[in-house]
Length: 342
Image (tube, rainbow, N blue to C red):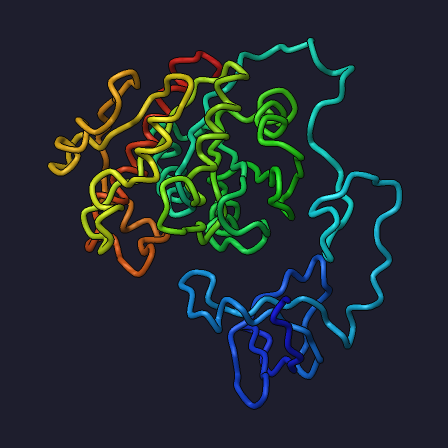
């Protein structure tokens, strides 16, 4: 059974809910549930915080009993996200309809598949730094947090104008546009939304299980296959680390290694050319994939004001992690220039 508990909102920013006299961190999707005000009685899912999880270690508001029973719903829509779950809701889709297919006027745009959400900000920044006017959008997939509005990184990147759009695809929901599939989102990014490039990958808090195939990093396999099937130049950002305490994620993470081994097609893997650790890692990447070295500027990114901390480590504690993401952003910009779409 779900671990649901009643509580009372005792602070709005940051959202804090008191349960049995204990003030606890919480998050609420206010677009679905309505606003949360001090004194509201709420029902929260306490499982993640009680288990002591890392990035998911806070309560999730399931229902606002005080003011959350007045929603009017949506008229006209008939396609549901999170269908047959208690928070199912109708959405308008960004996917092209049948009558729009077959009239493509643009070549497929390049896609950078990221292994986890921590790559989004540095990769986007590096792409825009390499090509100032490039229109880069983000397709949020499964594999991590599903609510589109939970990401502070997306909000910051959109606010700065570094991302031109945000589509939540598949089980992810709540972005600026909705797609039922990653393939549909990537197709729309090219032919409807006018992006020059797409970055696609999970929301915050990737799912892990300490197994070969049972983790959120496997979303990259499906995303890369969708991009390749649509004829899109496909790059895979490698998850690298010199500071992760878990051996399986040090060097080339087993998440990335598994995806590269299972891919049915060939992709480009950008690598940070200036990081010594990256040279020895290159040998672990299957030879059928193309590696391209890219120069990175860690100091400039550190001064950008964008996130420099991931999984409890800051940039100086794991330069290789951020270098991989920065190299991938530069690789994406190079792919856009090479496609002649701009």
